[in-house]
Length: 281
Ligand SMILES: [Mg+2]
Image (cartoon, rainbow, N blue to C red; front, top):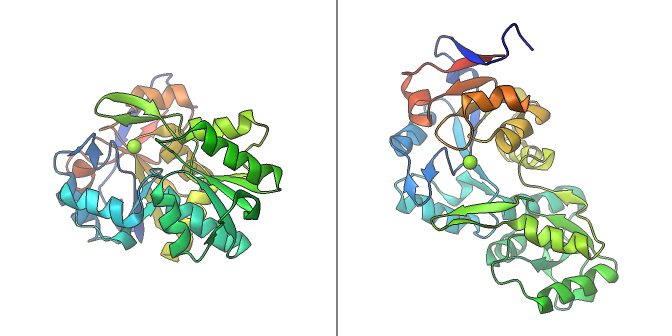
C-alpha cells in the first residue's frame, strides 16, 4: 500500500490501448445498464477494434452465444456470436479442453444445453448416464429437477458450475443467480469441482485459448473488482476498472484488488478523453 489511505489517480498518457492485442469486455456496467446501452458504449465498443480483437466476457449462463449476440445487437452493439464468451460456452469449452467430449446432465437453462451440443458433448438421456452435472442459473428450478441432478451425482457424476454469482440484476431488482443452484447441490453434499465464470481462472484460460494470445497481451475491462478485476489479476491480465457500474474509486482501497487502470467509462477510455489512470493506493 502507498502513502495514502484513500486512493487517488495519477493520469498517464493514453497510449494504453495500443499496448494490447485483444480486449475482454464485461457487459452489465460496462456496455449496458439493465436493458439499455450505456451512453457512447456502442461506438466505443466498435472503436476498441482499432486496437485489437474485442470479445464480450460475461457470466450470463441462460443465453447461448447467438442469443447474447442478438440481445446486444438489438441494443446497437456490432457483435457476432463468435465475439461472445458467455459462461455456458466457457463451461462447454473447459470440459473439452480438460476432459474431451463428455456426457452431461444440465441443471440450467437452454443456453447451457445449446453450448454443450455445439461443443460436441452429449446430453445424457437419464441422470445416471452423466459423468458431469453442469449447473447454471435456472429460473424454472423445481424439486423434481434437483432430484434428477441428485440421481446423477449419486451415480458418480461431478459438478461443474457456469458461475457462482449470488444474485442477478434485473429491471425489477435482484433475483437469485447461478449461486442459488450451485448452493442447492452443495446443500445435498455435492460441491462444484470447477467454476468457470469470472473470477475463476478457467474463464481467462478459455478466453486466452480462444484468442491465441498470452495473458500479457490481453486487457480485461470490467466494472466489478471482485469478479472482473480480481479474476484478471489472478490470471496475469492487466485490467481497467470502469466507474460506470458497480464499483467506485473508493471501493479499490477497501477491496485490496488493484486494477491496472481506471477510467470513467468505456466511452471515455476509447475516446482518449478522461485519460485512463493508474490507481495509486
Ligand atoms: Mg459488470
